[in-house]
Image (cartoon, rainbow, N blue to C red; front, side):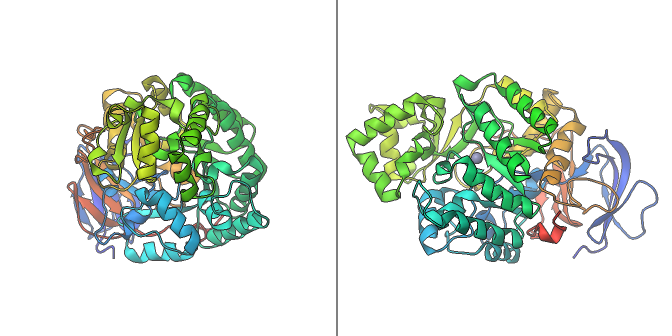
Length: 525
Ligand SMILES: [Zn+2]
C-alpha cells in the first residue's frame, strides 16, 4: 500500500518531456502524482530533495532480465539505477510461450540469460502471472520473441514447415491477448536469423493489430547496417507497427563512422510516416553469446547437429570461410579481433575474465572459438565493437532512448547491467556534456514509455503514476568497468514506484512493489 503519501520537497523537477527543470514540491498520494508545485495536501511524509533532481522513474526499453525476477531474493539492480520499468523479452528471446520440446532447446541456447532459473514450458500469460505473483522489484513490460515463437512452431529448422507460419501467428495473438507490449526479433540469433522479411511482416502485423510495437535487433549492425535498417523500416511500414531499433550502434571496423547514417535512415522513415525510433546503451562494447561469432547456419537442425559440425574439421573450415566473408548471415567473427572478445560466462569457470586470444593459448583463435562453443553453447561474452564518435553521435539524437541490454546481475557481466543509467547521466551529461539534463532525462523516460505505450508513465505531471527517481546531479554515476562491473552506483538517492518508496538514501527498502504492465490493461490503442 502507499500509506500516507509523500511530499518531495525543494528539488528541481523535470517532466520527462524535455522541459528544463524547475524547483517545485511534488506531492504523491494513492500511487499518483497529485500536485507539482502549489499547495500540497496535508499529512504527507516529507522528503528533503534540495540540491537534487526529481525525474520520472527511468524506463529501460531493452532488458533481458525476464527470469531474474523469479529468483527467491528480490533483485533491485535496476531500481538502484533509478529504473522503475524494464521492457523484457528483447532480441527475439522471450521465455514464453514454450512447450516441452522448445523449452529444452531454449534451455540449451539461452540458459546464460536465465540467472539459474529453470527454463520451463509455459504459456505467455502464465509466465506473466508468475512474474506478477513473484513480486518483481520493478515493473516489467513483456515482449513476445519471434525466436521463441519459431522454436515452438518450427524447432531449429531453417525453412518453415507447413503450418508453422500460422502457428506462430496464433501464438503471437495469444501473447498479445495476455498483455504483451510488442514483438521482438533477433535477426542474428538462431532461429530468428532463418526468417525472411515476409515471415516477419506477418508477425509484426499481429503486433500492430493489438497496438504493439515491433522491436528489432537488426539482421546486421556492421558493414550491412543500412540494408538491415531498410528491412526493419519495410517491416514496420508493411505491418503498420511502431518501430523500435534495439541497441543502435555501428558495429565493427567496417561500419565505424556510419552512426550518422543510422540516424538519417530513422529520420527518413519518420518522414515517410513510420513511427521509428531506437535505443542505445552508453558504452563501446556489447555483450552477447559466444556462438554469435559463428555463422548461424552452424546450429541448423539442433544442438546435436551443431556439435557434430564444430567437431568436424571440414565443416569447421567451411564455416570459417563463411565467417571471414563477413556478409549478412555470416556471424560476428569479422566484427572484432580475438583480443576484443572477453569471456564472461563459460562452463569452464577458469576461462571467465580472459579474452578469446588469451583463452586460445597456442591454438588458432578460430579453432579455439569452435572448441569453446562446443564445450558450452550458451557461453557469453563482452565484445568491443563501437567507436566513441559513433556512440556520441547516436546518443545526441532525440530519436534515441536508453536501453541497457542488461543480462542477469550475476558473475562477470557487462557493467551496463548495474550502471547504464547513472553512467549516461554522470559521464555523458555532467562530465562530457553530450546531452543536457533535460534531454537525457527525456531519453531515459518519456521516449521509451511512449514507444511502448506505457500510459501514465515516463512523465512527471499531475495524474501520472508516481514512478519517480531523485538523484544528485553532482555525484550520479557508475565506475564499473568490463573487468570490475558490479560496483555500486553513486548519486541515486530515492526511487518511488507507484507511490511506494522502494529506494531510500541509496538503499533498497526490500519492497517488492513491481508488477507486469499489460498492454490490454493500459487500454490497447
Ligand atoms: Zn540484441
